[in-house]
Image 1 (cartoon, helix red, strand yellow):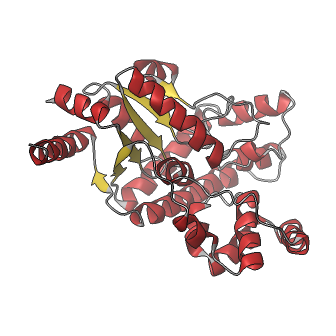
Image 2 (cartoon, rainbow, N blue to C red):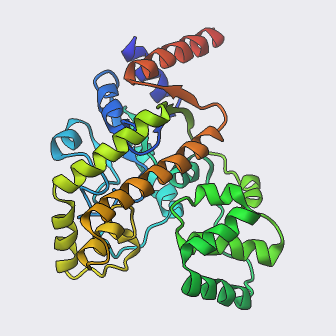
Length: 320
């Protein structure tokens, strides 16, 4: 049956998507699934795409990465700019290459904006005339009050966009705010009207986890990261000459560890902050996943296989 599923997905250009909050076990499920299907994994993680930040991003080890082909992991230097729009274009090319090899693309990750960009397209709004006084005011808010204040503004006027930008990336948040104040339209509504037609279909799975169990896993994972050398890894990165202000280092786990290295936090405070911030990030990821239509909630690889068997059987019968 697995061979039938494999052929059906390839012949119908159907990608599999596996999303879920951080620490939900996506990597292990994807590796288990690769035992049954001829997969190549496209990582949809805006941090694992960078080199050097390994422990704090829970990047899979070499043995795991060698088990099945992975793409978009360790391809950028920390200073390099990347965006969901770039990911959309590059991942589409990679999907075509994977189909040419008669294999099944599996999009796996927790960066919702990357997944949404790939499945629906992204509206960059490059041609909109900009009011630079609005940009200056927003930059002043960022400088004087920080990115949390900027994010709070977006949360008030366009909560749907705020959920998509849960990493609080100032550039993205500012662009959505700028669009709203210029056009008097929500950026999220405009993006909905700009959904692109794609050359592939998709089946969307998300890992189902109980909140208490997930938070327990997160807390334990952070302690393990600390014990496995997060501080040394962060120190090595800074010693390479990478500025601590880099956007790629403003990641949960690294920004708190940098504060610890600067003696701004004690070890206990740093660990506690990483745990808290990771839990908050996971909560935002779950909120975003619950907003997606036709998502299939699963607990393990067997759940995915059983659902695929039903879907393929139904579609095969429907074509007879």
